[in-house]
Image (cartoon, rainbow, N blue to C red; front, side, top):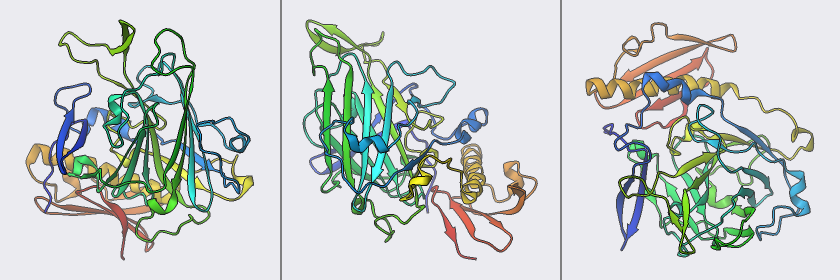
Length: 380
């Protein structure tokens, strides 16, 4: 039986002598509940970004050079935005990504503009976001559980981990998990750790083995039209140059100023561990589809209705110490919702500490979500 707990905006795990300890890094407030208030609920339903990734018969050379010919067949994403969305200022420096895939790997190229490239961490699985870094989040089966995170800094130092489920749902970070046969490369357009000049930025290439991301016997390589959830984040610290070195700027309390969080698909809040907010990655071998528009699948629109119920249930639990047992308690007075002019039925089952919400169109597939945010297909 799972109890809902408040969550800090970024909850990280640090592995010390084989024991996992919680480390709470408070980004913009001292104590913030991870569940949104009614006033900002809609920020969690802005359309996620989408990317159709081309198939390649030739693998790129993984050395950090994102300008080689093989990458010309892939389009750049839009430039990154603030993690909370368009209501916040645009990032100071541009970041963008492109992707390719073949039968064995997902290839990622990233371009990060930056006038002063620096890094300090060189040990694998160090907490890389203490430096400026580039991060990848992947949920292959789109259920918000059992997902992956890979971080890299300008030294090409990797921090990779496996999440059992989001921190908000008491998920655990398995830092001992490694992306076996991961290949990565970094190039600096300028000099590293040299405050005496102005750099253009740094670029990253990765080849991520698809088999390391296989979940529940999902087909590898992905079948035509397979959709994964993915997002990219850039952590950027404000620094000053003191005595020929880069030093993080501090506030009145003497602590480093909060980092900037710039992402491809805005999360709507300062928390990357809302996998339902990540962008959509669409796999195709058909060249004709590479420039076409991606339309959100009907099932994803059904799931959005379940997420609305999930967030409302979390708010209700905070206020009442138990989950609502009836949709009307959540302000839902009609258990029918229309999606693309099709009537869908909503249903809720709950006890004090658990709930399950369902949505179904006629006698078609039933989708459900529980108190841990596990969203999946349910049997009729």
